[in-house]
Image 1 (cartoon, rainbow over the protein chains, first blue to last red):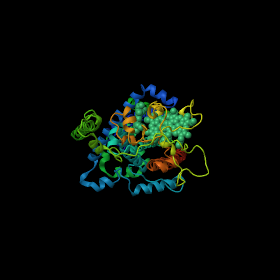
Image 2: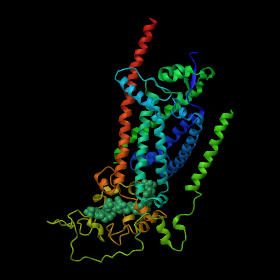
Image 3: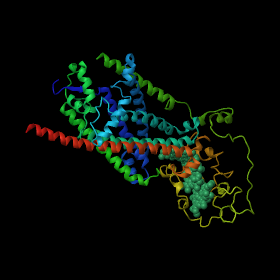
Image 4: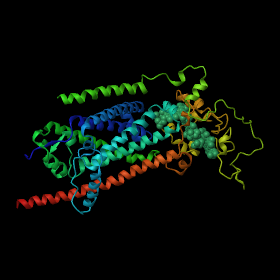
Length: 276
Length: 237
């Protein structure tokens, strides 16, 4: 093991999915906020910057359809990642994103560690909060998709179900969006950028690979598994090119700044809109 | 290289398939609007679509023109409750002029007295005026028999003016919904109330867990880092 051994964590396709989600999520947040806050001066400015309420909602709808398609494609991709021959290990093994008993134990150990009562948990490839991140998106998107389609075609919806379900759809769509936005722009950004171990930026979702040393510190159980398997010998992954690093630092911080801008204004102006 | 192709090709194929399916189901490829269809019996087909009580062919007893010797209810407080069950009654809902007998009504704006009703998206976002739905003077109570907003004809007389193809089920959308977290909502629209509290609890629960969790993690890592650096310097000296 040379000190610079790098391990692949995300494939190109997986990183593309993440990028796709960043871009679409940001557009949906901006256009959605422009609609939610339309009665305030900030919402009016946002709407004007987007080219008016009509344009804003049209963008919102098209990107929504794109997200639904992306969600379906991702689900199909997920099916291709399952090793059907060894289903049990593939679903419940350490490389799987499905929560298992170890996650509960890790959480308990971590809470003890917060207060100085013991060692931090020896985490494997996916930490429990990373699994939560993944599945939160996974159930959030269908909810937003279904309620979004209901609002996109309210007349059609009212033929299938009673009209008051539209009131519920508005509520759920809005509440789920607010939940996702607060979670992403506070917790997810904090974990990805501001946490001391990640600061100034956790690059792996953009570079795809990370040094083995880092894994040893952060995810010892995974590192132990990697050292055991002979997979290590076959890897010769180059660190990301400098121009690419510059590029994703700029991109990452642009998104971060924009997200914080939206979040703060959203909090400030939430007083002036009827969400109750 | 071959492995990559095995994944990429189906991905492209399925995404195209999904978009076509979506377009057929909802988009430009779906059929004509409901109201544009020509059918022998509009009512039968119409009821097939509706999720409602089915008032259309029945006759109610029609209201008489005036009630000369009956006071406007709820205006003069008296010793005895208005309703026989002592429950409070929204008695003005059945008047032809819902503001009958209210002093200083003329010259005031609707939002002076009905502040809650100005919060719906038709008013705040679509910029409609109250009269575009409630009509000119006199403004009928919602449940007056001839009121345009009476649920038996609301969809046709009001909603369909702007929403092409609106049916009675669509008119069941609550335009002035109560504040979803309020006691009023619990009584009038429990599903809204419970969805609201469910989503609020989800938000509060997620944040109550993850905010302290991540912040504590950050603080602990900060201390850990300091210690490590110290150890490093100890090693070198």
